[in-house]
Amino acid sequence: MTQSDNHGRFVWHELLAKDAETAKAFYQNVVGWSTSTWGEGVDYTMWVAGETPVGGLMTGNPDPSQPEMPPMWVAYVAVDNVDETIEATLQSGGGVIMPARTMPGVGRFAVLRDPQGATFAVITGQGQVAPETDPKPLEFSWHELITPDHASAAEFYNKIFGWKKQGEFDMGEMGPYYMFGRDRFTYGGMMNMPPGTPGPSWLHYVQVADSADAAAERAKAAGGTIINGPMEVPGGDRIAAILDPQGAMFAVHSKASVAAQSYQPGTPESART
Image (tube, one colour):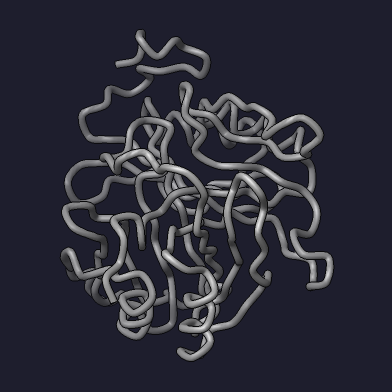
């Protein structure tokens, strides 16, 4: 079956939190996002990079008929048909966390679980989607799956999203790091779970406009917890994995070319280096 140009593309990132105001203050400070409301009468906040919405924030249970989800980040991947993707997920051993629903002006979406237990979401959106480009500062730049069997996970996501192998490198005792994507875009990596990992999960990286080190310091000062890093990764970029004050895990990423301390939240776009 021929797939559209958008099928398999990351298009939205949503934070499920218990306290919206605490979450807004933390991420505005640490990442540098501004916020806006979805629309009149809708209790939904959008994370905004410059003038571009890159994600959302909601509180409470997205599906009251299901068990409450802990604070977490969930990435939405565009698909040509949500219901067909759900069926393919179920046939492969995955599950449904939030059944498909349709929202006028947004599209049809669902939250799913892959066969090894990691949470992700799918959406068939309404309207045009901007052409895909390389990630810019304050946008999500990398998506990392930590899973019991990365090879089986790669097969699953290839089946439903068409993601293909873009490269691999050896991490020694931790095994291979498998990189995936579409066309010329590399979206992230998959790796086997290290000992002591609580369970399978996706970790989503935001590209900050200054250094990952500075963002990690801001996170600590704002009540977050540094899980890993800051550290350099192959190619010279720097990363740090963080738990926000409500327990949602995310990561920050800075390009090797970015000078440390070159950006403070609130700096006009034209003044950023």
